[in-house]
Structures are given as structure tokens and as C-alpha cells.
Image 1: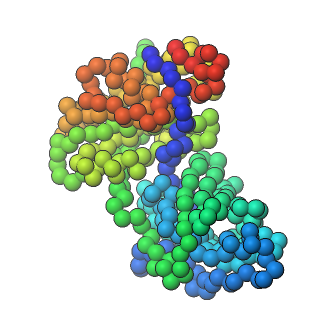
Image 2: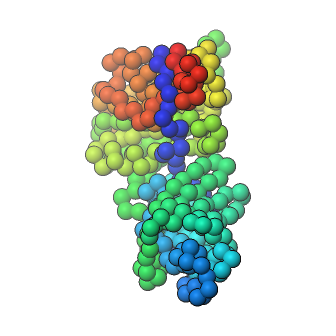
Image 3: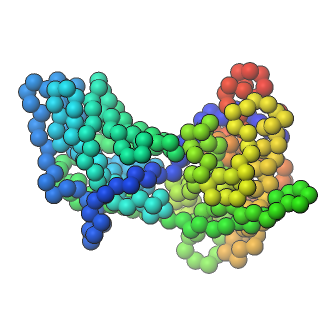
Length: 338
């Protein structure tokens, strides 16, 4: 089996964040809610330039391209203290409802930092006339770029991103291999184009937890990739392997080790999960089993390559995004291949 280094861990396509926002729950129009008394006060003359330049309205961005975001820095003072309105739109698949919150942030050099609920935080770096934000929690890490906007523009900012596709959660049955193997199910997100098919299907494999950067319980829905393919007539199936998301079974892909005697069985176990996903597709009347390319990112990328090699003739092609089963540390130690 091939085991190659990963140039990036699986956080590249991470799914959208869930913040527990409050806001205008009863709003009738699909716009991002903002407080009725929203106002941006010009910084006082004695406020340093590196602080005052953060003041204003920032918008035209969406984490992962699916969750609209507006940031309004209402006031700043000479100590770097900032009063901020932090607002998000809707993303049903990620269980995010539009809303806002007022928070106090702090500005240090070129960074505006906000502490959110439940240990989450976001830091915005000012680069030219753009804010480059990084949201971090115990479950995920997301990035976004915001640009300056006018107050009137964001009062009517749409709460959804046009063209975002919404997936359906399905359960994939499988029986764990070996003596006394028990039946389990895998969680998967299914995206289908219009029409009854049969459709070509992209099977997209997720990566690792990035050494714990992504909680094993997080479902990787791959909505950005799905949109590209659904618009071109493909269905997309994004399964979660055993022990990831809400899939049954144990997570036994042995992250954090360079030992070939552990890495090889972990990859073989992942191939078994892909077998179950392929069997599920072959049973669906809307799927064309003769037109199934396989793809994935990080561990999912090299898994896709290995699956095509281990199951010749099963898939029509492979797309590998930064694929690798081990970290660069394993290659540097001379043990990255097995």
C-alpha cells in the first residue's frame, strides 16, 4: 500500500462553524440581522493609527464560501479596546441560524481578537484594506477574508450564499470484517442534482483529524466540493469512516504514529469503509455504478489513490487533493513509506 506524506492536514476543507448566536429570530427577510442602533463612531484624534484603521464595516466574505459574515467595529479607543458587532447568516446544513452578538475585542499591532462563547475565538489580521480572519474552536478552524463596506450595504446583506447546495444525511450499512463481525452504519452526506438519473457519482473521502485539530465527532460534509460537481450533473456522496462523525465503530486510523505496522492496517480499514460506500451506490437506482470517480483530501486523497489501486476497474478516475497518510515528520524520520 502507498503511504506518502501529507502536505496539509484535513483542515483545508473544513465544514462551517456553529456559534450559538442570538439575533432577530423572527426576521421575515433573508438578510443578516444587525442591531437597530448600529453605529460607527469615528475614532478620537488621539487613537493611534494602527488601532483606528480597524473602525468601520467589514463584509463581502463567507467562511468556506457558504456562511455569510458581517463584522462592524463600532468604537475603538487608545488602549486597543474595540466594541464589535459579530453577525452571521444562515447555513442549514451546519445548523447555523442568522443572528448577531455584541462583543468586546482587543487590538494589538495588526490583529483584532475576539473571544466568543464556549472557548471559541476569532482573530482578524489587517492586511491593506482587508481583514483576514481565523476562527478557532476545539472542533474546527475556519478562515475568511472581509473587505470594507458601507453601513447601508450591510443592512441589506443577504443571509445566504446563492447556489449553495444542501445535502441529505444517509446511513450506509456494512458488516465489520472478521469473525463475528457486527453490523454497523456509516454516516454520509448525499448531494443529488435534479432529475432521476442515473447520475455519475463522485465519492469524496475526508481527511484525518489533523492531530486533533478537528474533533472525531465532526461531520465533514464537503459542501464546497459538492456544489462544483452537482452543478455539472454529478451526485456526490461524502461518507464518514468508522469512528468519525456519527458513524458507528471505533476510529482506528492511528494518527500521531509513524509505525508502518499500524499505518498499514489503518489504511486497509479505511478501504473497507469505501467498499461499503461503493456497495451502497451500486444499490441506488439514481446512481450509475459505471461512472463513479473517487476523490479526497489529505488522508482521503491518498485513500482514493490506494482504493483505485486495490480495486482495479471499480472507479473511473481519481482526484487527489494534497494526499498523504502520514505527516512530514514521518518522512523526515525516514519511515514515511510502508
